[in-house]
Image 1: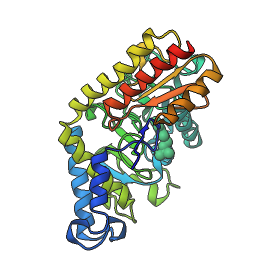
Image 2: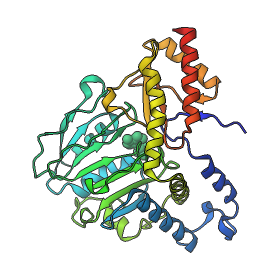
Image 3: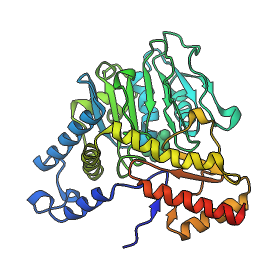
Length: 360
Ligand SMILES: *Cc1c(COP(=O)(O)O)cnc(C)c1O
């Protein structure tokens, strides 16, 4: 077996312990004589898997009783449409544009109503988070939308916007369960799990109960109505059983590590190793304003395309893969999610330092 350090932005690295448990349970899940891949989503075995997963994510995040947890398909991108369909009662919402994913959500929102761009950091290639302390928000807006951690650009809202009392909707795909959050600060928290939690094909929505109603846009498909999903315990139709199962194992793993405050401490320490190196390097530099840095996705460049390509190639040959940056930023990006061990980052920084000596 040859495991690499996988710095992919998503689908991404998973805890080895979780993969091993899944391997052990593959042929015979808890004595039922079959794999989770083979069982009915209506079976008592699966019901327990999804119930336990919900209980554990509630524990981890401290989700209050008046919030529902939904396990849905269609990825985060499907929610770009579901959010306005379920929430735009006045057909008006504010979007803060901090990167490609926020922009895509905004563009989808415009199909259904007045989706207003309240602020944007597009003027500097999304390398910062705009000041959101006093945005032109009016009380007839149905929600304010953010992408909390910008996977491609490596920025993060380290402080939530002042929404002036309007419900906040946050896409947390690439920072899900990376640190504690105060769920009460949000109307909706949602994310695709394939970045920091589990296998692709599942999006988890955490929605305050009063936002789940029958009062949705008239054309809303049954499947995209949050009420349909909530009334049926996310089992209106066949869900992504496998991804729910693996996410459940990851929740157990996170609890065993000590929960989200421990993960935050660890993630900050891991990110610091890389940022400290970047800040003193003469060859490499980070592309993001220091105050808005993500602790999950770290883009960096040398400023020379050929050197960037050489770096990615040599890193790959040394067992550190998927470091090529997104095409809109160029250079490199190291995604250092919960499951990336500290040793992976130390190895990367050692390698960067060697590379700098040879090529600087
Ligand atoms: C990857 C990503 C998405 C898209 O997720 P899908 O599940 O592929 O639709 C949306 N938002 C953010 C922040 C992402 O990182």
